[in-house]
Image (cartoon, rainbow, N blue to C red; front, side, top):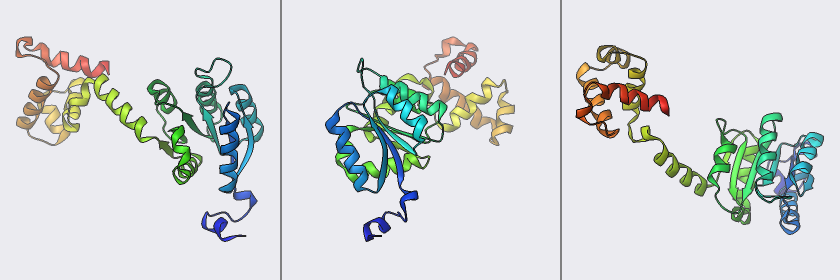
Length: 230
């Protein structure tokens, strides 16, 4: 066994990470194959479309797949749809999606409520071999590898679309208790704070959610409705 294999934690053929690659560009596909083999991975299949990807996963059950978002025949979201099927039917298989650009809808759909065993990287990151291999290994191990650009854009969209994002964690706790029907005294008891603190938090909630004093007692109801709508 050579020293480089030992440094990468590879002690035998059975411990080599098994990978399926789905990329329609022959040049890029062969480049990724060579890169992974140089990094002591075993590429069990390299295909160019979503249907072939699903067949390869069913046949080989790899630890992880590297999947291009856009593949034949329409070059829109074939890779993503295949990745979602893998996430649903083969939960033990990690999925690392590569995309030319940050496509927020695809990233959100892929991550869904379970960010484990999934990655979304821009294709430019493949050039940074250490970063790419590190992300691939994390996904194969049940972790996540999300491109910094993806995280940045998702956070921006989240702040824009979630009206409760302006609230502090404590204010969200108070609003949650309001939605549960608790009085100010009940909220104070549940959160182990004084009623004065609860009243201050509620005042801040009304202000941040832009509920004017002219709304009167209805402000409490309106605040709860905003919570229930998210």
